[in-house]
Image 1 (cartoon, rainbow, N blue to C red):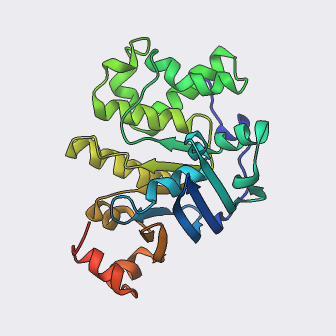
Image 2 (image 1 turned 90 degrees about the vertical axis):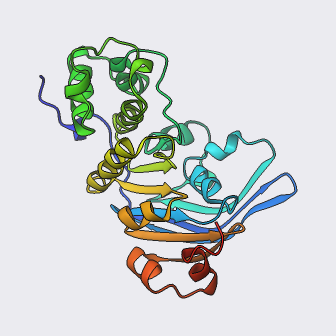
Length: 265
């Protein structure tokens, strides 16, 4: 295998985390996010928790502007990643910015192509064509998510033939292959069996050394296992945020206490 050095492929954004200031999102007449101010610390796992419909996924989808695909959406405020304001990015700047913010979706969604091409696809889009370098990229990232030994003899097989857990790990490797600075995970283990879910959780824990990770989860137990930082949301507002041990062990807001005690979900 060719020697692989990720820093030789793409530049990363220099940043100290994500800063959200005065973020408001309207969809039609509905006010979905209300004056949200949060800090996402660098190289930590931040879990966004709260009951269904509180705005968790909307906030996550704002970080890479996938929210733009929602009809009638209006965004105001600032979302800062280094020197870049995500809310105010447009055109080619937005396309490049999205490379720095990878997304692992709720359900596995491999591209309708081979295992190899799923990993190489993003690199080709961004100008990497050399076969030797692509081979090195594919092996490196399949190894990084613990999938290489399971698929190395069938890289040309359709990705859709993998198990659900393998497909989700493949989607994670596909996101990593374009070397983002931030990884977003929208309930990325909810469709997996318990064993596959634990594998993906552990991957996120291992990856935070190199990436800033933001997870939306409906499972408090999962947040308690992996989170370094927690944001609790309710009805489109941030109720409480801080280090996970503080929020879970000594919540300051009565609403947070009730949610953690299972009074509502």
